[in-house]
Length: 375
Image 1 (cartoon, rainbow, N blue to C red):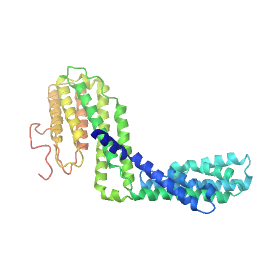
Image 2: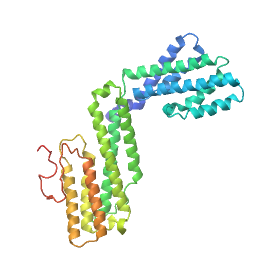
Image 3: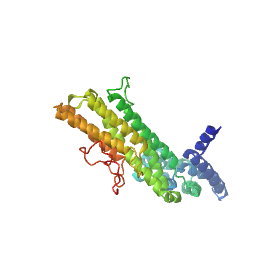
Image 4: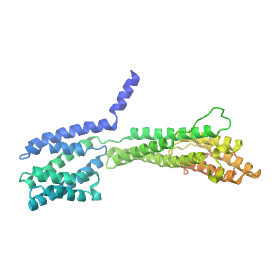
């Protein structure tokens, strides 16, 4: 039963459940309040409609949506009233309202609320029944009432989706680590089993998009949010982690592209066994670092081993060049070394953790990488 309770707890804490509850409460309150207002009973349903239409996970997003939507409704209402005054509710008025409404909906500041311009214009034109101005005022006012109820309900306990962001970032770490591990298996000359092809590059891109979306929602939810101010350091830490992982994703994609392409007429998979073995070691160490390291770390952790593995690859490349190896192979291998080092640097807070500053440092030295700048 314990796993079931944990699953139920995660479900109840899901941001979508929180939004559903707040939308339901706000719509109910808006409906009750609207029914008490004199002279608008016929149009009271616009209040809960406004509450639902402006429900978002972030309070600031709800406020922004309310302002934009009411502006779009008023713009469409003015268009509908003006058209009715000029042409009346005849056949020619419909294409005019829709056409001009679609043009006005292109105003960039309307955002996602742009579709309300022609819709409001049509409502005023066709449902106003000779009282277009009163209808437009009721429509906009009741919608605004519902939106205000949403903002009030959301402000009681504003959402701050830290857990959802953590899961998205963890999935991105796992995807990066999996990609690096698979690349290492492909290149390792000592691996007798066929590793197959590494995961498709679209998988990593899609996982990055989900992590970026979750982090953007967290940043938006933190704005104007008392919980966001209390957890400002936690929000900043997750933002820094996303930036670091974004760089790693791009670099991992470059590494995979080099394993598939033939720059200078040679492929990484065709490298000499010594170079491939060192590359596989460095990729595995970078995979472990990606899975474990965070930008908030004060301890070097796996970065020490990854730094040493990259320098070992650089040393193997120097030996290959001294033995008059292929210049094409050396050029591609040096690109791999730089890409691996850039990936490691992206995961390292340089103000707190020091990596080696030269590939010529002794790869066996224990006191090179991983020390803090103060040590």
